[in-house]
Image 1 (spheres, helix red, strand yellow):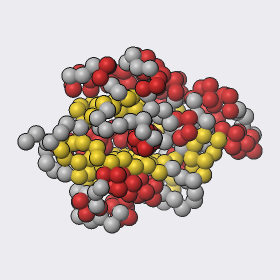
Image 2 (cartoon, helix red, strand yellow; image 1 turned 45 degrees about the vertical axis):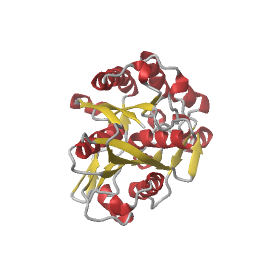
Image 3 (cartoon, one colour; image 1 turned 180 degrees about the vertical axis):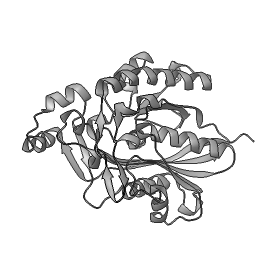
Image 4 (cartoon, helix red, strand yellow; image 1 turned 30 degrees about the vertical axis):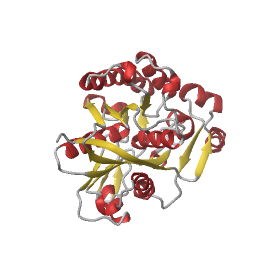
Length: 325
């Protein structure tokens, strides 16, 4: 029997605190930084984002998203035999956020680990879980994206601090005789590490370097629009599919202009693109599973649809997954 990996349930979590662009304008003005709702919407498509409260960590949001995904899949925690958490904002240096999440879910014994590929992290996590299920190493996996980017933001830099939000999204991925994930494609090029990074590190009990997010927006945009088309073409070719087979494009929710550019190149109308960036902002590794769960629960995306998931992030990393839901 050929083994495939298939998504059987989705879940997500957003912190209760929702900040509109007007809220951000007021917050920044108090610090002497000027921006406007019009400026933010025109450049990014973002109108709101969610921030966690003090004392809430990536594992807390991940646990909520996982419980919803397991409920949707009809899976008990004792059946889970693999947990992969994609995050750039772990609860602590170590152990992994996945280990902390495992305990919060009341699961023990199965392998767990974090994947750090920034905004491409969920794509990387799905790719690894797919390979482990196909080879028989796992049967039922939780793949999670969870981020607390609000704690990395420089609120004196209006070009970055308005872009990001917090949240988590998860899927249950199960072994199946029916094809689910059709093809995956992941890449990285470390020579571009400096264009999107948080360059601080911990040493001797102190944070050395700058612990806040830095981004060269123009450089990121230029790279993103090129590699996203390339990776989309790659998974379609690997799966023996074409643009016309895509029912929904669910891209990393970073910037509406990047999403529109990718859709045009794939000859997809925007009404076939799942868009949540307006309400979520950029939630890094959480953005794709958040958007997927939103679309499933809204009735947009249905069982049997062919989905193209793709992301690009710091590293520089990028990748795509083509799947039948």
